[in-house]
Length: 389
Ligand code: PLP
Image 1: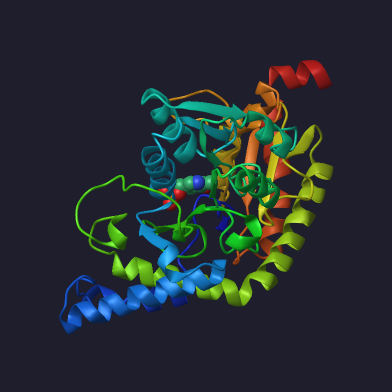
Image 2 (image 1 turned 120 degrees about the vertical axis):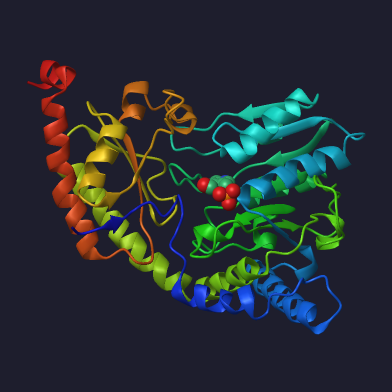
């Protein structure tokens, strides 16, 4: 059976070059990067090379990069670290209503710790209004956290503008760039950010390694306590193979991002155009143009997202439900609800996220299979029969 992977926003396959770069660091160069002997120094050198590669890619200095255990940890470190360091200055945090749970649940935790959080609404495309941020700032505001691009609907936020507002008021500005690093151009100085989270497994690197960029001069406390690694901001023995893989993944992204953007955008646009033509009562979620090149989030009326995902899986196609329904929750996605998508539609939403490996033949295959699945499922939908018969 043909297999088509269109869930690259969930995770990507490790690139062959990345894997090759990592392998020597499991058994040959296995030293602890904190050790003084040559085994340790070999590992240390590899870590510092990766740090430099990543720093250059985002226009930062090497010493502004902290390696972490992934995007979730980076988001936690940014918010909790700044909240703790600036506790005496204020207790107010501003964020959006469509953040990833790594940010929103951290904010909820901080609320329980006595901080006050403003969750700003977004418009129908998922955009945060910079004027609303300006209006929400008060003397107590210590950090603003707005994601670079949304993981579900792909909308890219006007970070540069928001960053200027934060800077004018002397407020720390964090962004969750887990979905954008390596996918769209990203320079910390162009975006006016002070803190930025990213994760290797979204750009063809390994799982379990991330970075937090911390602009020089930003006050931040560690959230874990232990050794002196990462300038005491993130203790624990370095995950050398994964850090090396992250560096190589970023290097590959710098070489091929422009090409990938062009090819993937072309395939994605054709997919959106044809699927919305082939399936009636089907619409695109998110911004029509200000969106991640690889993201197509669509709502299909009168069908359940879960049934669609499972039916597509039986045909070898992998995508995810636009609604973040899990086995423990039947609530539709907070992101789709925030952009005003009605509950029934949110339940029938799918996120397709293309990747470097996606071909025109893959897209043709999905364009062929999906409409037939929708027709079959709708035949079983009493609502569809009633309203459209
Ligand atoms: N933030 C965003 C926007 C994400 O999409 C993800 C992962 O899906 C994360 C944070 C969490 O990253 P990680 O899986 O590396 O912890």
